[in-house]
Length: 249
Picture 1: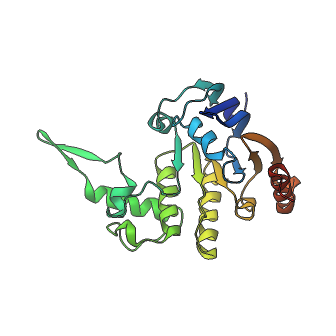
Picture 2: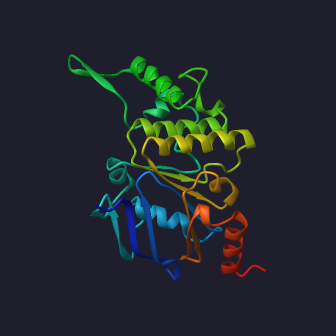
Picture 3: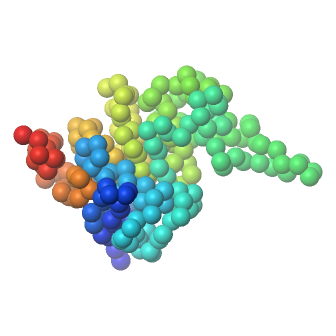
């Protein structure tokens, strides 16, 4: 039996005259952290948006847990256990932490003919879920706008773990974070792997992803230009490959 969680074959995508992806093969094994690297415009985000059903591929096939899939929306991908955390984190600044954690998945109970949100239960679960991966917050009622970038990333990762994600996709999770916050986020990513969750770490910063990745996949101009085990390459080598493909001397 294959240990592949995700397999994308021959993915092509054009936007008008712009060919964003040119027959890309991409896969992720169970409990594997894959760094997806490349400069802006390399095709990283387009590939992931096709995987989760945000875009439709012009050509190619996608398999998840061995079964062919054709998601029509990110909601369908989420129902199978694919959680995506974009740079904006899909958190609403003016809402409290507990509301953000359960956004779209609120817990309710019936009281007569009415459904009521179980606020107390959700507050308790949020604190427990965050504490479970080593995160302490001041209050579940804290407004997200007052949380640091690292804390917001931690909430998004904890939410994915709590709701049983099989694949966690992180889009530039360490962008604009301090050194200390970056370190904490990388630890949370390692914790996700320990719990059997596969991770796709999208970034253009080789030094951040190099610390946690098992494998590094490189894209440039819509083509896959490299696929390496982390242990076989250095950060400088990866940067040289990307620079050479981009025509940078």
